[in-house]
Length: 301
Image (cartoon, rainbow, N blue to C red; front, side, top):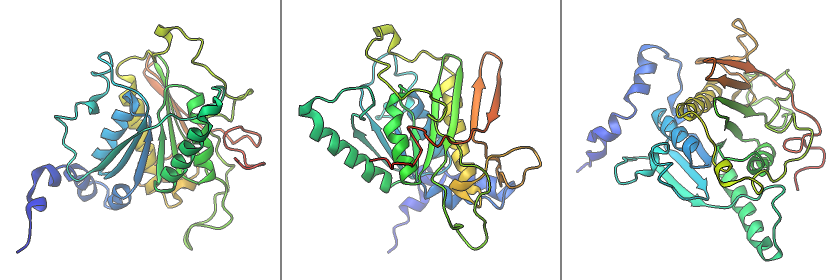
C-alpha cells in the first residue's frame, strides 16, 4: 500500500501553489527547485527575522535555521509574527532555532568566557558550511562584523538588512573573486567586487550599546518598515538565485542592462528606502581593499 497522505494534505499542496502559478502562467523559465533547495541561515530572529522567514516560506524554501539570543517581550509580540508557535503551521518545513551569543568588536571577553567564545565561533563556522544563504538581521552594527567576515571567507550568499526610524538598507555582500567561471556557459564577472556593510567605514566597529539608556536600546521604526525591508532582502536573494552567475551576478546598471538582470528582473547591489518620501534608490559600491569586514590581505584569522 502507498501512503498518499502528504500528497493529499492541503496544507502542503496549497502552500506552493502560488509560486507554481507564477511559473505556469507568467515565467516558465523560473527555477523554483533552486529556490526551494536553498538552505537559509537567519542570524537574528526578531522582527526582521520573522518577516524574512515568512517570505522565504512563500517562495517555497524548506530549510531555515534561526540564530538569536533574546526573549520575546509583550511589546514585540505584534511585530514578530512567528512567535505564536501554537497557531503556526510549518508542515514540511525543516525549521530549527539555536540560542547563541555572537562575539562582537568592542565588547570585551572575560578570561572565563574565552573557551565559550571559541566554541561559538566554531559553531558559526559549521552553520555557514551547512547553509547556502545567510541573512544578517541583528540590532547593532558591530554584531554583523564577524558574520560578514565568515560570509566573505566562505563565499556564501550574504543578505544584509538594517532599519532606521523611516529608512532601510538592503544589500548583498560580494564573495571573493574567483579565477574560473562557474560553468562552461558563463564568464567570470568583469565588474569590480561589490562592497560590504563596512566598506565605507573610516573606523573599526566598536561597542555602540553599553552607553545607551534603556529607551535607546530598542530599535524604533515605523511598523511597516520591517516587512518591506525583509521582503526586499528575500526577493533580492531569489533574483540572484535565478541569475546565471548566481552569487557573482553583476549589479544592474540600467533598464537595458541584460547582464545585470535575471528572469525576475534587476539584481542590484544596494537598495535604500525612505518611507517619509515613499521612494527607494538602487546604489552600487565597490569593495574597499582595506575593509575590516571583507578585505583579504591578511586573511580573517
